[in-house]
Image 1 (cartoon, rainbow over the protein chains, first blue to last red):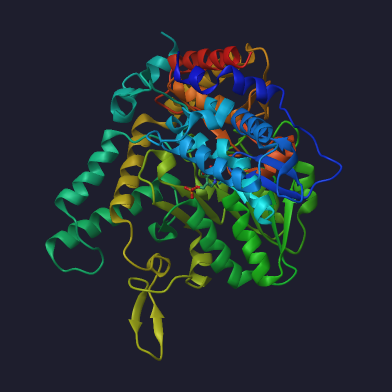
Image 2: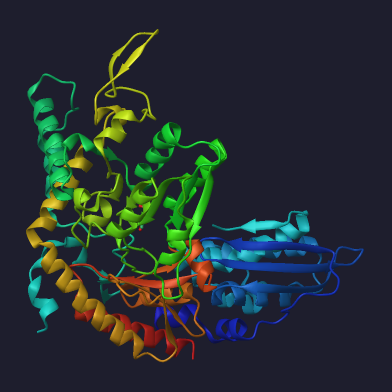
Length: 149
Length: 409
Ligand SMILES: Cc1ncc(COP(=O)(O)O)c(C=O)c1O
């Protein structure tokens, strides 16, 4: 398998072609923009948290490369039902996986997101994979724009 | 063997950077519009300076300083001759095209441009020929006008003429577009601008590597280019300016070398070109740039242009044979810079897959976001060709694009 095939695994191609949780909801409690001016990626993520701070709904809109789109789609699928503290913890785990080949992240916890485990070999693309994660974190922290230029 | 491969037959051997594998593949370097590779002839000149005559210039009486000063000023003379400027002191060394344009925006701006005065640029400019004028607009209340491009990627000449008026103080445009490859009719645009009473700045960053420039024949008032795009070092560039204008313009940086005498009451500025060269210059860079221009002269623009034209025609043919490939910009007169899109593959993903196949292209907005906005895209892939490229590079590019299409099928 070539490095390109390793990066563009079927699950990533699938989610980039048919992103899940795509669209603008009628209502949301949190929202933020994810922007990478260098490659022109631009997304909006919307979250709805209940009173306990658990993610009840999540969706996104926008345009960008396959990596950023698939990462956002796969991420949002996993956020449903998670408490915002668990979301922050998942961010750290994912961040560790995509930047640190020697990290001791728990692959089980990441589920399908493990498809991005080889991306540290493509330093210029790590920011694509992590773009909307920053947006989600900012949305939860009450900020509205994330940029990974 | 085709003509393009024979005219510059030995050129590849002079670029050591080509002699390497990338991800286990032969390197097809198709990003010369971002920066050109360096020939041994230039690398050796820079090394020679640091090895044998590393000294400051214009200030030492000792042997090494005199040698370094002579080499630095010889480089200035090489630039003068290359551009056919009337005087060597019309050649100011800067850190690059960006620095040169900013110098004009600050100094000529201070001299000539006030509230309500107009600066005209085209829609195809690099950000470095847009933002300095926006900063000037903020400082002075000047107006920045834009001459649009046609969908082919040519300057809309009628709109350009219509935008000129008695308030136009400066017209700044690129000679060759870094995003579309368009070759602009510099002499004609300059004549029209002059007829309206405006001065003219030409961004020649992409032009100097591929076509001869004669500033007296063009009659432009300023011309800017970078060393690194013409096989020279990074961090060095040139601002050419007409003597009378440069004499009248105030310095923008103060420091050593740009003064004749300093007291706390009054400082007398040095003569041209030193007035605009405060501080220790990029001496090795200037020497390397001089060598790079000698290298270009040695090859000859005739051979360079013939080689590029053949490669460009073949590349356009090969690319257009790919289903789902769309060219961005089809200007009437173009150089070896091709922007394109592939159906269903974001340029950034394409760039990554091409890189894995040893093919270096640029993916992004190419510092020309207004061009991207014109075509309604966020980014394109861009392949650019230089003297060391050959048909194998085109074949490798096409094969790599097909591979990407396979992955994304
Ligand atoms: C047309 C054009 N103008 C200006 C520049 C800026 O050159 P530099 O970054 O060397 O200052 C470039 C290079 O990117 C260019 O292609």
